[in-house]
Length: 167
Image (cartoon, rainbow, N blue to C red):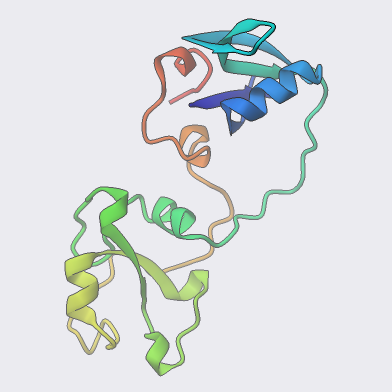
């Protein structure tokens, strides 16, 4: 079960596993704002599982550099195949190298796009021009991520989080 962590100003900060949230609670680092119906039991106590917690001290803010990862490539491309514009489930999308790795293409922002499996298979180890496939948008390094919910990796927002995560 996931727990939404808010910063001191009640803005979404990150998502953690429920065990981490309970450690933060007993460490005096957070306060519980929303709870799930499930109960966590130990030999000496029982508490309801936290759903939304707020940090009691300031969160360190570092300049955000969007790290290269499969999820962030899919996020940058809107979970859409950059060749046929279909929007399958994320697990059915692949990372396609525009200049194939077999031809020295690097795995970096400027050479990778989201592609559905059929398009990636059709393109193979050719360039889009050779495969006669057009890219919707050329790949680029994003400066930021689209929205808070997407940044946190949320495909669905839990009912207990609706008040806290802007859409």
